[in-house]
Length: 252
Ligand code: GLC
Image (cartoon, rainbow, N blue to C red; front, side, top):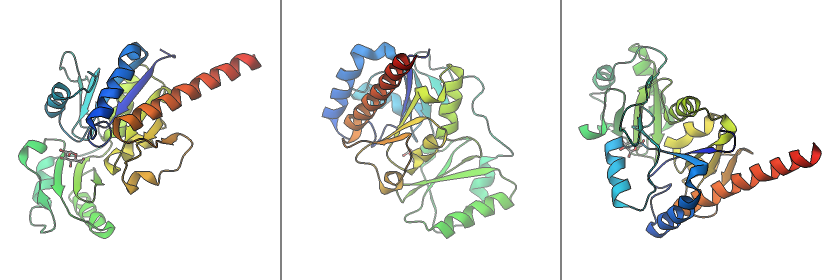
């Protein structure tokens, strides 16, 4: 497995956003598809991702991570990946909804975006004090919860320990990829958890400020936007891996 990479990419705003860039990405990836395993990792649920894959030039992936990390599904069979979700303590989505029911700043997202493991709201321009207040009210009700706030609007409550990053790490482990052979790609704060696992990272050129400020030798900031930025970043990490191998070879 050591020469292969697992690419785990967000979809909306990271791969999708420019149809020509998606087309170019697919044409670049397809001839070397066997070098990679590919997983899409989105706030949307798998069924919705499948529609986008059908309608666009997006290459077929090997797995779908949906609902902000709460679901992992094998692409070909549609079966869930066994053992997921894993989380760290007491969780009950009904309690999240009950505790926050009368909060005027929060608007529950439509039911089709909600599940047993993901309770999402719209909260325009929420402040860090507001986020901390909602989080502590949920904790006071006994929940082990993580909130993910992105695009100054989307607020997701998930079971603690279950997010885009931990789902990607679970998949990487199930498929035998070490951390430095996983390449994570994103554009907004709902991808932040993906950059907390020690993977190699790509932030696309059109990313929001919430990710642009990430500063780590393991995160590459692409100049190109959308799928072209993902492509630029993957090429960067492949070149880097080759340089390291060559240096290893010449020193040994
Ligand atoms: C997607 C989901 C939405 C979520 C957002 C951010 O748009 O449909 O429910 O809030 O991603 O994670």
